[in-house]
Image (cartoon, rainbow, N blue to C red; front, top):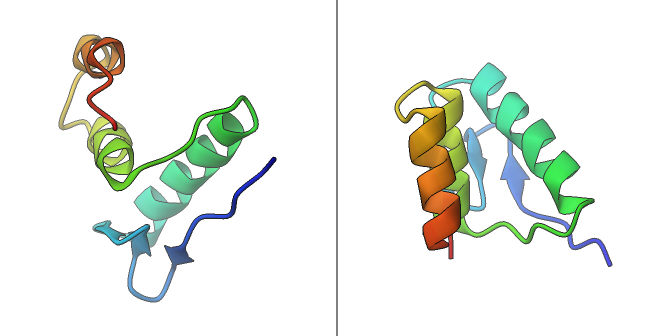
Length: 73
């Protein structure tokens, strides 16, 4: 079952998580959508982690470590 998430393009937020620009928001929204079809259930913390990865603030190894720790919950 697909559950919609709140995306506010005018305020640049996804589930209340703020983005710096529309391009970053849309890139993250596309990644979320793809993963949601595979069963991922996004949380605000998970969106923050993905946002930071897309922005280059965290590395791929750090992203993998967060996933293993289930830090996105």
